Structure formats: C-alpha cells, structure tokens
Length: 303
Image 1 (cartoon, rainbow, N blue to C red):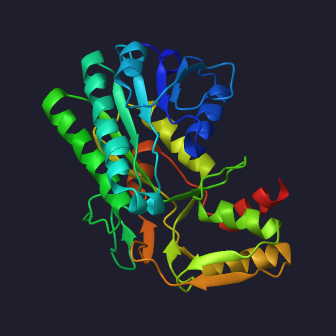
Image 2 (cartoon, rainbow, N blue to C red):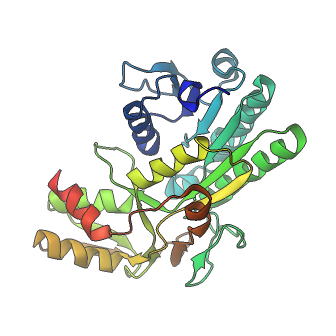
C-alpha cells in the first residue's frame, strides 16, 4: 500500500485561508506530491500549481489521476455574499462541485474530502452542543449551498462508490496574512483593534460562536486522509461557546485598549447559538482541539 505522503494530494482553493494553511502544514510534514487548483497561483514554488476554477472540466480532466486524494476547500462565497448573489453561488459552488465529483468518479480517485461548514448547515438548534446527526435546517443561502454539496456527495458515494469525508468547521481563526475577504470575526476584529478602527457588530453581541484555531482544523483535515475512515461527517470545533461581547472583554483585558463598537440590527441569516459537539472526531481520530481561546489570542497579538 502506498504511503499517504507519496500519494498525489489535490487541493482546491489552496490560495484561501484554510487551503493555504493546509498546504503549509503538509509541506512541513514532508508531503511533497501536492497539486493545487486555484483561480490564482499559489505563491509556493515547491508546489505544482494549476491556475483555474475547480469547476473547469478541462482543468480537472488534465489534472486528476487515479488514486488521487482530493481535498475540496474552495468556495467563492460566504454567508453575506450568498445572500447577495444566489444564482452565482449556485452555479459556482453547487454545480461546480458536482462537476468536480463527476470527474473524480471518472478518474477513480481514492477519497474526496469536503470542507463544509458547521457554522451554517445546522441552523438554529438552541443552546446546546450540536452533534453530526442532529437536524440540518440552514437559515441562510450559504448554509443551503453547503448542505446541498454534502447531499450530492452522499449520492455520488451511494451510486458510484465515491469515498468521502465531510468536515464541518465552526468558526476558524488565526490568519497570518492580510486577507481582502471579510470573513472570520476574530481576525477581522483583531486587525481593526490594532488599527484603532471602529468595530461593526450585527445584533447585540450576545450571539455565541465556537471558535477553532486554524492549526487544530488543519490537523483534523490531515488526520482524515491519514486514516482509513470513509463516508463520515465530522464536526470541527472546540465544544466551547463564546459570545462576541465576551470575546471583546477578553481582548480589552489583553490589549488594555478602548474598543469602539457600533451595533447594527441583527441579520436574519445569523444563528443565535452555534457550538459543536466534537466527541466523534476526538474518538475516531484521537484529535484534541486547543480550547484555550485566551492563549491563542495572546499568540496572535504577539505576532
């Protein structure tokens, strides 16, 4: 059996936050046979970069090979963008992902790992830790899109034997580089606080989120393809909830800064409480996320 480090690993969206951190970690661990598919060239000369969309059938036909491991991270939208461009979101992310799955089946790839979203696919589940088998009832178009891709993947598995792992991250943070995308509450807020800019909060700041450090999310992704698990859904969070206001109180204590905040009317597509139960991933993959938000924020502030 071929060692996993020798397998070809195809990563869509390697230029984004999660994708770039995943690539960096894989290279540090000695994975060398990595191919990226991204609309922009990834700035790492040690990789084979394919410039193009993950939905481009010509690019996929020329790139994918038998027994490849495909990690589908790419997504052209976030909750706010999905609301504004529903048709484009469907065409790029649902239809595009289906095209990718079709060619993965044709090429007989080894496994398909999809990075979904534990923050939006469940919807409003009340003030409890959400398990993978809890009802999925998204209240945003972004959540509907992510869940649709998951469902298509399950059908491709049932009909054609495509092996998959679906990972549902909560709210990743820990960006080490500037990003133009307005996504990632902690990273956006820390940047604005550093620049002494006013923060914008939709609602009263009492919504609760499960914040997962990017290094822990990347570790879980790697564990999924470094193992034999297949056809599973895994939450990726900490199981610890933090309100936006509590996060701001923490940053005030750490920075000794006065933080300016402007509150806006709550958006109807924002869930009130989202904390994930991660016992399944902990048990199946011996994975232990770092739950110390304070220590991680301190680390980021020192960089």
